[in-house]
Image (cartoon, rainbow, N blue to C red; front, side, top):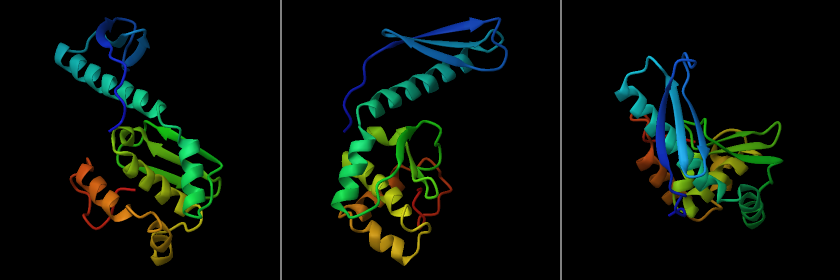
Length: 172
């Protein structure tokens, strides 16, 4: 389990100046969520909950050093090291992504709340893509150098938020 996040209270402000977007800013222990003035209270509350969840994910993610973790896993499993690895809060249907041409790896902040061995499995999965772009036999041979890969795939499939996800295709 990831470490606890810093507690904060949520304050919703309806702004006549804000027309279409919702913004949030954390100052001290108060998360201020600014919504358009026309937004209904129920919708504003939903947005406030979404923004609070996003900030909590980011807080958890900040506690995990992806660069160090990727370096250790690459060394341990004889895989390439990424040129850049970072957390991404924009990933809603995938747990990670890799751009082999640039050596860039992105990891979803949703993973920060999961056990370390699950985070490691996604990092290893993406590191394998630095060597093998697809999901063929050679890719899986490399990926299974990580001993908990199958277990992690099952965990991620169970946690997947996409109800239409094909059970045979892990959400990478």
